[in-house]
Length: 221
Length: 362
Image (cartoon, rainbow over the protein chains, first blue to last red):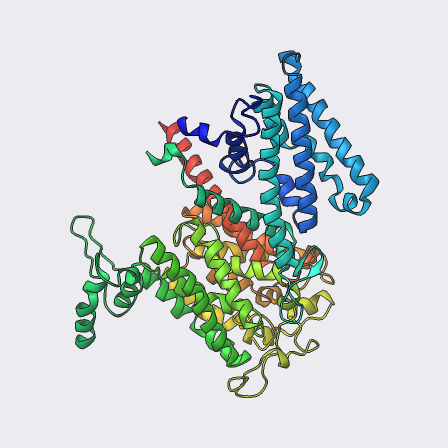
C-alpha cells in the first residue's frame, strides 16, 4: 500500500479529515469497483430510465445526491446507532433524501418527474445506496464517507450517461431531444428504445469496462 | 487439383507459427479444407468410422436448402442473390475477425447461418438491414457465447428477431407479391419500388382480416412471404432429404408438426369461423421452414431424445398460441427462440429423471 500515499487527496491531508484515503476511495468507487459495471448493482434503474440521455443524467444526479447525503448522515450517527436496528435507521435516512429529491423534481421540473415516473422513488431500494451505507459509512468517518458516496454516485452516473447517450442516439437519432442523425438517411433502431436494447447496451458497456480493467488479481494466478 | 495442392503446400509455411501471415491462418485453413480433406488424422483410438465431420454435416444442410433457394429465385427475383451475398459478406466478416482474434479455425457453421438468414427475410428488405441483422446474429447470438457449438440461440433467428424489433415498419412492409407467368421473377430485380402493399400482404396477415388464400397457391409457394418460406413443396423436398440423411432429427420435426396440427385442429374444430383450417395453417408462414431447418439445429436443440419431443411440443404449441391469440401475425421465430432457451433445461431434467430411475432400481 506504499504507493497509496502518493495518491493522497491534497485537500484532506493537511486537515487529516480523510486520513489520506480520499483519492483512493474516489478511484475505487468510480472506477475499479464501479457499482454498475463491476459490482452489477442498480441494474434495474439503469435499464429503466436510460432511453434518453436527459433522463439518465437526472437519475445520475439523484443518485449522487442521495448517496452523498445518506452516507454522511449514516456515518455521523454510526456510533449512536444500535447495531440491531441499523438497517431500519439506514432506510429511514435514505428515504428522507430520496423524498427530498423527488419533491424537488416535482416542484421545479414537473415534466422530468413525470418521465422518470416511479424510478426516483425507487432509489430507496437501490442496492448501491444501501450497500455503501452498510459497507462503508458505518465503518468510516463522515468526510471519507462523503467521498465514497460521491465516487459511487459518479461511477453510476457515468455508466448511465454512456448507456443513455447511445440509446437515445441510435434509438431515435437525437441527443437531448435534438435531431443529430437526420431521418433522411438514418432509420431509428427501435430496439434501443425498448428494454432489450438496454440489456444489450448495458452488457456491452460492462464487457468493455471489464476488458479495460483486466481480470481480477486472483484469476491471474 | 495437384497444382492447387502444390500451391497450398508452398504457401503453408508463411501461415504457420512465426510466418509473416500467421494472423490470417484461419482464412488459409478454411480455404485449404474447402478444397482438400483435413490433413489432421486420428492417431489413437477411437478412430473415425464415418468421416461425417462438421463440414459435411453443414454441407448437407446447404444442399437441402437448394429447393428453397431456387424457389426464392423463381418467386422473388435476382435481388435474392444480392441478399445472399450481403449476408455471407457481413456475417463472414464477423466470423473471420473472431477466428483471427481467438486464433481458431473459421467454422463451417456460418455457411448454414449465412444461407438461412436471407431465406427468412422479407424479399425487399433494405440490404444494409440484411447485413446488420446477420452481423448482430453472429456477434451477439453466437460469438459472445463462445462460437459455434456453444451458442444458446440459433444465430439466424437472433438476427431476424433483432430486425423485427428494431425496424418493425420495414420488416412488416417489405413483402413482395410473387411473380406471375412461366418465368416468375427469374429475370427481374425487384427492389422496394416493386412493393405494392395491397397485393403483397402475407397470407397470415390477410387471414387476420378473414381472407384465406387458396391451399394450392400456399403449397406451391405462389404467395407473399419471407423469401424461402413460401413454397411448402420446396421445403418438404429439402426437409425429407435432411431427415433421410439423419442430419435433422425426425423426433423434433414430428413433435413440432404433430403438436401444431393437434392444437390448431382443436381450435378449428371448436370455432371454424375464427381459426383457419389445419392444413392451411401448416403451409402458411414459416412453420414448415422453421420445423425442418431452424429448430433441428443440433447445437441449439436438446441432445436427449425425450428432450427433443418436449422441445418440439413447446415450439409447435407456442406457434399456434402466438398466431391465433396475439397481435403478432407470425410466431415461429419467437417460438423457436423460446424452445432454444428451454432446451438445456429439458436435457437436464431428462438426464436427472433417468439417473434417479437407475438409482431406485439399484
